[in-house]
Amino acid sequence: MNKIDNVTLSAFSVVIASWCGEAALRRCLESLLPQAHDAEVVVAFRDIFDPTIFAGDRFKDVRFVRASADADVFQLRSLGVRETHGHAIALIEDHSIVSPDWMQTLVRARAAGVLIGGGPIDNDAESTAYDWALYFSEYARFMPPVPVGDAAIVSGANIFYDRATLWSCYSIWESCFYETDVNGALLAAGYKIDMLPDTLVTSRLRMDLAEAMAHLFRGGIHFGNFRKAHSHPLVRWLWVITSPAVPVVMLLRIARVLATRRPDRLTELIRSFPYMLLLVLAWSLGEAAGYFTRHVDLPRSTREVN
Image (cartoon, rainbow, N blue to C red; front, side, top):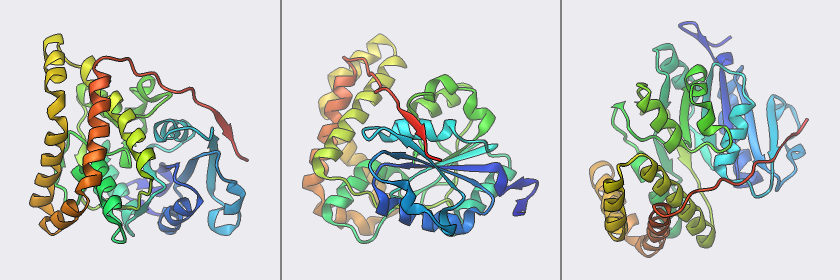
């Protein structure tokens, strides 16, 4: 059994939120399974493909849990986490490929006492200008190399939690797992989040422009709701008044991250700028709407595939 300081791979569950289709999931599993060994692997998937295509010895230890065809990634995360049994739970998404020592790095971090840890997210090298725009708008903050130490923000596409720690805020993620809400509650409760630079995943996120804009608009609404719920009324109105400047702030933040960590990618930012502008506008409009509306999560649907 793989063991490091009394923490074993069998203590881990890995939840894959599968919303990008069969080809993406296959790439993800092929990167994960050779190193997963005794870890529990749960795939929460949208009802858009037949999981029996993953029959065979390579995938025999993977448990597939079905959601409705229109389930979003946040519902899939929640469904998958509720199905786990491990003492530590890692979350990734099917468009990502984990680095060869990803699991062992998580085990070492947990053995060292880390209760919540997130890692960097890189972009697939074979990406178009639009693909880069999508990556920058989603994951620029987590572009490697990331700084070591405490982190205020980590992505739900590459994170792990101690089970008891995560269950301490169960009501927050029971139906939809937004890392903003979960991590905010845990930080407020006195927990810390560690950034783990060696737990790298590489994303190959592929969405058409309309789908991506809708996804970011919904994310912006939720973030606006989150800020509104955690702000004084006067601060809330300040967010509303300054919301037209959000696209500029977002673009400058992305440019600053690239200039600091990967200046060689500034060319990709320039090349992808027209798409970037549309994507950050979608988020910004959603965020502004979130200050005035109440976010309602879609109902969840769960049926386990035997």
